[in-house]
Image (tube, rainbow, N blue to C red; front, side):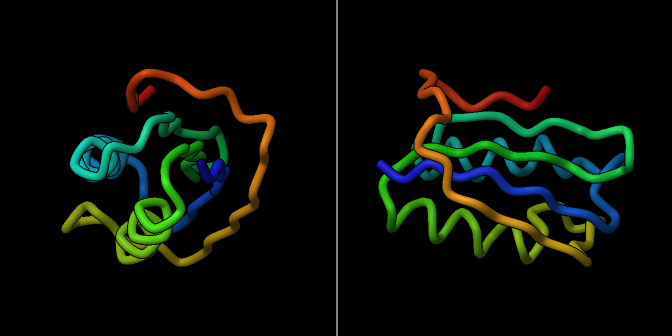
Length: 90
């Protein structure tokens, strides 16, 4: 299982970004969460098979929300991320 944390910035709050990210995660069988940050960015933790995580990353970079736009993207692998049973939009 691949475990990643990413932070995305741009037009990612108030446009359904977290909800659409959850829909993609559910489609791919990825668990974790998406959370708004005070600086206007969104933090995402995701756990799943490597090929599914790679596809998830591509879809998030392209903005899962039709009204969203990702301008900045940071990602790191973190093996200490806790595995959960589902993906939630906080």
